[in-house]
Length: 411
Image (cartoon, one colour):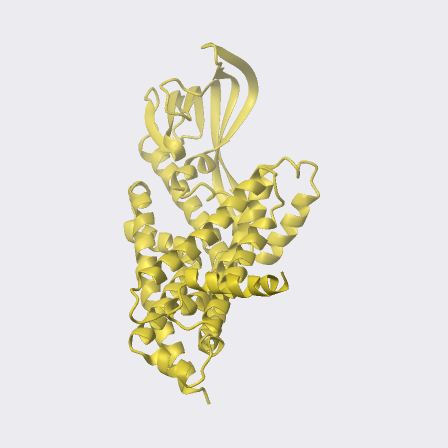
C-alpha cells in the first residue's frame, strides 16, 4: 500500500505538471505556428496541413516542456506545503528531505521515460511522415503548374521556394502533351539580390516521371544547353552541357521546409540506426573536420540529456520549494530559473565547442548531466543539514566555518 505522504505529493505534483505542460506546450506551439502562414497558403489544404504540422512539432515540444513542467510543479507544490505548514509538520515528525523526494523521483522516472519516447521514437516517426507529406504536396504543386500555368512563349517568374529564392521559366514551344519543349530558359535566383545565381538555356527539353523510394517525381531534362553562373567581378562563367537533369519535386519541396535541420535525414532515424550511422561517421576520413557530423552527434546526445533531466529536476524543485513560510517565494523561482539557464546554457555551449573541435561531442551529454547531479547533491545537503529557514548564503557560511574550524584548533 502506498503511504499517505507519497500519495499526497505524487498526486499534487502529477496534476500540476500536466497543467503546466499544457500551458507551456500551447505557448510554444503558438510561437511555431507563426512560421506556418506561408506554408498553409502554399498547400491550400489548411486543416489537414495544420494537423500534420501538429504531429510534426508536438514530439519536439514535449521533449522540452516535460522536464520544465516537472521542475516548476515540484517547486510549486513544495512551496504550497511550506506555506500551509504541512512540510513543517511532516519534518517535525521525523520525515527527512530524502523521504520527501521519493515520490517526485518516481514521477521523474515516469516522465523521463515519456520524454525519451517522445525524443527518440516519436520525433523520428513524425519527421518521416512529414517528409512524405511534404513530397506529396510538392508534387501536387508541380502538377498544378504543369496543367494550369505552363504555356509556350510565356514567362513563369513567381515560383518561390525555401530561403526566398525564385525560379523563372520560359519555353519557346511546347508539345500538346507537355512532355517536349524547345527553346528553354530557366533562371534561378537563390539569394536576395536581383541578379540570378544560375541561368540555364537549352535547345530542347523533356519532362518525364521517375520514382524515388516509392514516390514518383517529375524530372526536367535539358539537352544541348549552357549553364551561366555569375562571377564576383560581375561577369559570367559559361559551361556547355549535353544533358542536365532537374528533380522538380526536390526543388519545390524546399518551400515546405520548417526549421534549419528539417532536411537532415539522420534526424528521422530511430536510435539503433542512428547509432550505427554515428559509428560510420567516426570511421570517415573527414571526421575531424566535418561540422555536420559533429552536429549529428550532439543532436543525438541532446535527445538523451534533456529527457534524463527529469531524474534531477524533481529533487531540485522540492529542495528549492521547501522554505520558511515567512520568506517570499521569489528566491525559489530565481533558483529554478538559474537551474534551467545553467542546464540549457551548458548544452548549447558544449555543442558549440564540439562544432569548433575544441572538445569531443560526448561533452554535450556528460557536462549538462554532471552539472545537474552536482546541483541536486548541493540542494540535498543544504536541506538535509539545515532547517528551511536557512538560506543558501547562510548554508555556505556555516559549512565553511565547519570546514575551517579544525584547522584553526590545530594552529
